[in-house]
Image 1 (cartoon, rainbow, N blue to C red):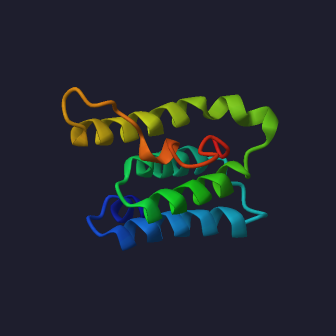
Image 2 (tube, helix red, strand yellow):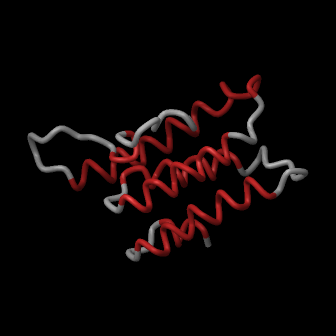
Length: 117
């Protein structure tokens, strides 16, 4: 369901997907999310190419909530899912970028954008 919401044409649905992901991560303190984290990180990073600033900010916040669940010793394990999520965002942005223009991911242009990563 979250994947469908995250790719919906309606920005409100994409915002909802990001918000639900963040709420799930932040409210389930006693739940082991280790298996879900790669999927959630990829989903949220995929939204970093969105054209709606509200989606970008919500995805950024939710990503911070998800990555807060990762213990510092385990961070290197998740590099592949970060790479995959950024690749999805890159592909989305590349399709919208005109030939000759610089390809910039809007989500990485936010202030402190790398903080949750």
